[in-house]
Length: 497
Ligand code: COA
Image 1 (cartoon, rainbow, N blue to C red):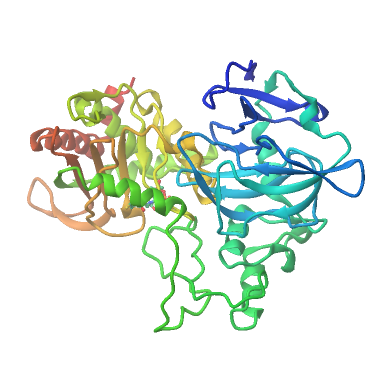
Image 2 (image 1 turned 180 degrees about the vertical axis):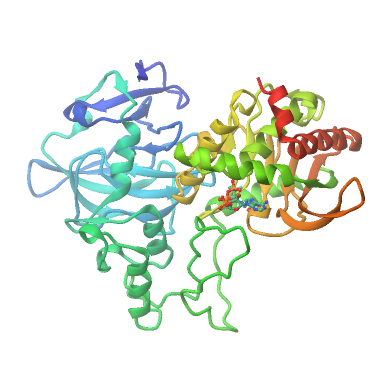
């Protein structure tokens, strides 16, 4: 069981201490405050941070025992200066308790749930949904009762092992106007994207849980695009996102749940969240001279092998796609060509070859393209990689990928073939130096050694490498080795550590 004991060291935000409010020790899961009232949490899997009143201002209200505390958005590190409010879980006038979820915010790196530090009444939300909240600026005002808990803070040992369950509990519940609303994160996101307030929707699921169908029914019942949330005309917007988790092997028609935006009407939408990160990263990538290398791979044996392995992993509760094998084969090939798992320093004077194979997986999530990475692939089994990929996909579809998952990648694979397509021209993710895009596996005719036509499962791979330090021959040799492992998957056994 992991326990963390901390001591406040200095006022640097990088040196965090764990602080819990004494009144809520039994309910604690993880509270990380930085020195001098700056707080933020970094969790390995999910993240929650609790806004601390930075040099808080207290307003006396009519009752002598009541105070209004102004929370300011705390520093979450990674140089993040602003976040987008994805969803409010509370409204003005709602009663909140410590550790109740207040809102979901999206930085250009991760999605984070903010929880209350106090018991009290929400007096003011400082932003609308989609508003940009700045670090250090007020987020919510809460009227607290009696002596407020910041006076009762004390350093304690924090058991973080119970964090996951509590985060799940919070993710399933929201307080709106005094009643609990049950909905999954995907449903909440759907509601948020369509500016629907969940308390206005009748849930038809168990215990009144709001289902996706309830949201779509609610949208249909709205009077020609008038938002039930704001009461204003909803701007023409993109149709509701199709359920991305239900990805089928063949390209499937996208269900259209709402009429497309009227033709001929321009509208503006801000670039924010993950999209903003994409702008930044891809602009940096433009400076890299890309070298492209393409090949086709006969994965017939692997296709058959996966059928068997899939049955086994299903019994262990893990979905098994081709990706874990692609990833492991890449790691085994990187052992022979470590320069492909490197970065170039800022002055372009040195190549830093990375010891860990932290292989990024381009992921199509509800928040758009994101690239979480699997750490230390070199020391993980294919089954472990499958389990980790399952976990990342679940976090991705819930919009819960955190900084831990999204940073530190050293090499990337993009399986565009899970959506469709044969070739892609992948763009390197700086500071990495190579990336591979995998096309769709297709059953096509090929000749065998005797010249007879046979059915083969063929897949294309497109590599891009930083031509400043990677030459074509190195890329080709790496690709050949990766191809050899995939065409003869049993040979991987020989090189597994
Ligand atoms: N060819 C044929 N079938 C494929 C395939 C491919 N290249 N890749 C995946 N599949 C199959 C899987 O095996 C699985 O089949 P099953 O239902 O029989 O088990 C099915 O498609 C769904 O797979 P998926 O859930 O997508 O898992 P995955 O491990 O193959 O891929 C991700 C995981 C995260 C890579 C994928 O979900 C994703 O997001 N891909 C898009 C990446 C992207 O957007 N790239 C562009 C970057 S610019």
